[in-house]
Length: 63
Image 1 (spheres, helix red, strand yellow):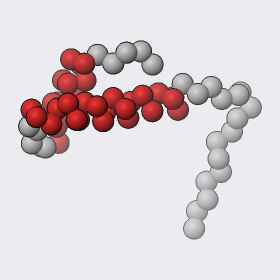
Image 2 (cartoon, helix red, strand yellow):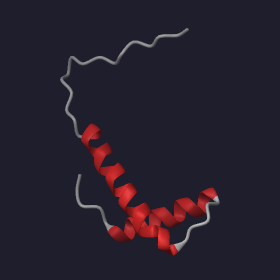
Image 3 (tube, helix red, strand yellow):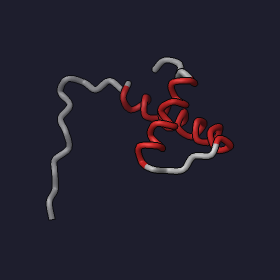
Image 4 (cartoon, one colour):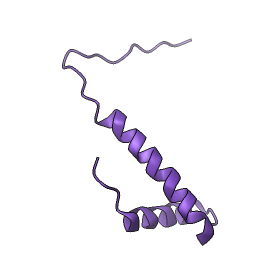
């Protein structure tokens, strides 16, 4: 994963909050940005993990 663009991340946060009707105070932005940055970096670890071609999905169990 490349470096996260701060302006794009801030625009995403504001747009997502508006779409969900969540009030957003400017003082919260650094904490929200830091949390989302960590979440995106952790997600990239899973997304970038190479699986061998013979890998199969886990079976689905139904109760």
